[in-house]
Image 1 (cartoon, one colour):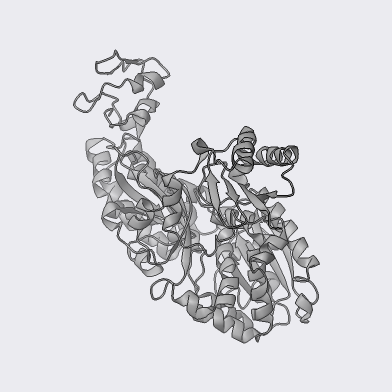
Image 2 (cartoon, helix red, strand yellow):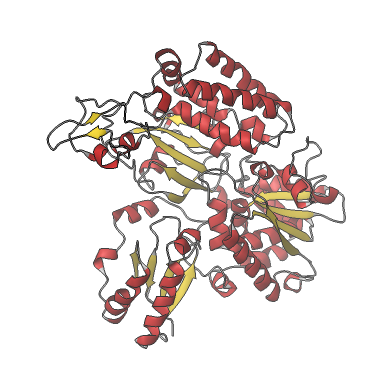
Length: 585
């Protein structure tokens, strides 16, 4: 008899909110009410929308009720009201925001996340898992690579190289030993796509790696995952062990005679190790530093042998392409950018989380569709950083840009791995460029001069501008140095690091001029340029600023305007951050 499923999102965010205690409480309640034979608790990965803890009650007939912000103690009333009496707990039901978040999505890579137990291979098999592997093994390796190439799947790690073509290059390389590497070194601020996939559906990545190994003639694979993802590593270890017991890994995969095994290499958290030659160096036990190419890894990679490197999201697409066909995948998205893309939507939007949409979807549709629009209705949209710290900041005028490799590149940004940070009018674009450049400077390996010296000098100039020391020649300096670094840096980190500066200079030049010429920051983000005065024309006399002031510098009486004592003011910006109408400058 099919049981009612209680799906509990237990990725990193769910566990931090007490999901394990919630699951244990549900199991106790099922035993107490003699429901264990009719219901089962399923510990899933995160579904993408962070309304922790998300719980779904899925009836055998397919009826489904979703609860959000569930606490461990809520297990009692959900069991007694919903499971016993059939009466959903209304105050915990997911609202319209939840429906809006998922309405515009097309979930292929994320289809199983939040739906199956990632630590139980039987759940994956029940959803059609490893059918693609069996089908691939019935084809020639050349045919498998050709099918992936025909699908138009491009690498989702940032470069966007055609996956099937990369496999063909590696297949053609003459060597008795070859390797497959899954690049899970996700280090972009605000990005968590790879982590969630590995936590929620690790078998999909493993299946993709095995198929890749078969296509190129490799006998061994490595998953390179940063040590900051302990849950992903734990679930990967279990998934690999279970796949081996089922015959999907080992000396003869599904008794085909094809041998393939997978190891896990934990990275130490260096952003530069996302670059493939630095990643290879790290696996080999050397310092993670890029080397010039060619030779490319497809000819001379890990241990000097031909190697195919694909990121987590790329490999998670492979099984779907093999089972449903290249034509099915190629029918999704515009020419040159096929399939879907997973984005980590963060920042000043109502709904933050993982969003998977077809390529060609516009930025506006993403931000104001699944994203739900701006977090604060009174504070409008200013820009969106796409592509992580190596991407670019795009203004409102470019919101109708379709999300595909060529269109995004034309704006001066890059697709990257899928980080997307939405910014409102309280964001200073000069400070934002400084923030992302500070990250890339600290993560640079320092091997080449353009990156080691050039980026550092750009950062120093941005820090001067934000501190009120900007000079007219600074803009000319940045516009001259940034392209030079892009053209001469050794690896992708240096080639793309200036993007955030170049795009903000291009699309928000007035903010740079205000910082330098007028010594003001319109977003009140650069503290040395802020005077901290209440604008009576805007003030709505709500008094919120007084409630958060830690130094007692603000006086306010009901019905009156707030006043700031500049002697007591410590410029902490608490008042600016809480003001709903931007009345403090």
